[in-house]
Structures are given as structure tokens and as C-alpha cells.
Length: 124
Image 1 (cartoon, rainbow, N blue to C red):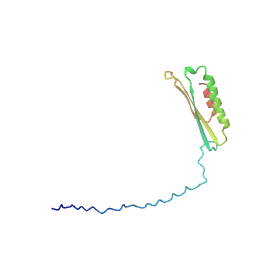
Image 2 (cartoon, rainbow, N blue to C red; image 1 turned 135 degrees about the vertical axis):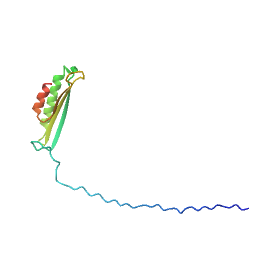
Image 3 (cartoon, rainbow, N blue to C red; image 1 turned 90 degrees about the vertical axis):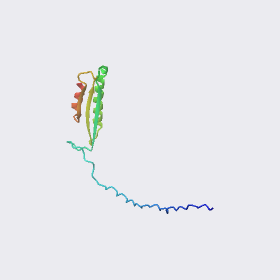
């Protein structure tokens, strides 16, 4: 007896289909001579520097508080003095205290009136 051989036909192999995707070169950015808009102020300024100053006003600072206030005022003045005509300097101040104190924060919002801010700090 002959053994019958099972013949199986396999499906013809499919060719991998590939799509050719052409990448379009990106257009070069357009060059313009326009500068970024300046901040609207009374002066025409190109840049703005905002400085936030924090001062620990807790009781543990008692012996150091006057020196810390003087140092902050000197920092403000040095920054303003070193700024050229294209730099607007604005400064804010936050004095903070312990959570159990009645007044926890003493805040002066951003301003470019440096004399007013220095006076405010001296009264903290």
C-alpha cells in the first residue's frame, strides 16, 4: 500500500507593497527686519527686567532686619544704575512672617518707581 501524500498548496507570497512618500523640503523662514515689539511705557525700551525680592520678617531676623533692608535697597540701586537705556527695571517686594502673626505678608506690587519702593522697604 502506498501512503498517500497530502499536497498542500500555499498561497503565492504577496509582495510587500511600499509607497514612496516624497518629502517636500520645508520653506525657509521668511526674513524680516522687524524687531519684537517693545513694552509700552513712556520710554521706548527693548527689554524688561522684573525682580522679585523676598525678606524674612520673622522675629528671628530681629538683629538682621535693618541690614537686610539696606542690602535689598543697594541691590535695587545697583541694578537700576547698571541698566542701559534699553532696559526697563521693575521690582516687587514681599515681606513674610510666621503663620501665627496677624500680618503674614507685606507686599508691594511690581513698579518702576524705585524711590517709592525703597521707601516702602525701609518702613517694613
